[in-house]
Image (cartoon, rainbow, N blue to C red; front, top):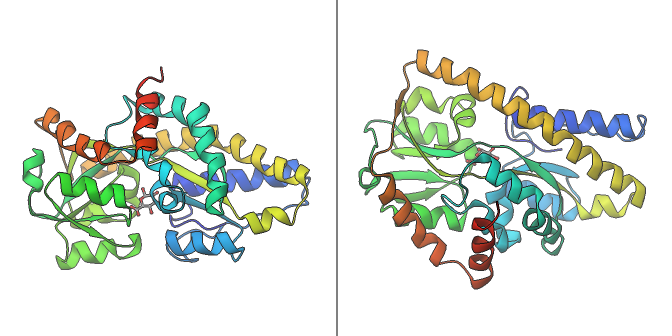
Length: 295
Ligand code: BDP
């Protein structure tokens, strides 16, 4: 199982819990080995290997699966969720379950979701408070069309690149900033080189647990079911660990001298982000409406 975060990170902890549960339910017959720290490669290349059975399982960001299943874009549109609970109602409800199942058309098997907080911007030299402050700044984003469009709608210069090179890009000044959740901002060490974190919370990108259709074809239906069960059992644990980790690191980041800034002109951020919504396909736009109507 591929994981780009280090072993102690809450998504990796969720992977280990998933593996433990698979071993438990199968009475030791099925063993999952987690490879944290990105040793199996960046997320897009991992997913290509998962499609063809070179890697059996992966935990990736939803942005990484969207190229294989374009309707996934609906689940991480900027400011689409009212809050974390709203997101989880959507993910565990009919929309989230359908999109997870539809991953099969992209030669991937979706097993479940993990929490990943909300993403915000952080910068090296110049603090950002208003969305206008991003104008002309070079900001790293995931290699994800909706995220690139978001940066464009904010008049920033989107710099898509793999996660593993972001630290040095920030350090050498190749980029002025990046965006991520607090946990990743901490664990990656990005806070050491980009100490201004503005709490604009522009998007929630859940994580996805993925299995290879090739690996799944080799095991019985019952074992497939068991693995799905283990994934859904690991979710509650991962959500708890996530919340605990976020609370702990907020204190550490503050004492390390990070400036947490409140975003001003929140309405303007929302208004510009809406351009990304209207640029989506008719199918995605219809999903956006259903998500908004989810109570
Ligand atoms: C983190 C996700 C990770 C992504 C990374 C990124 O957990 O899966 O690869 O963001 O920005 O929050 O690339």
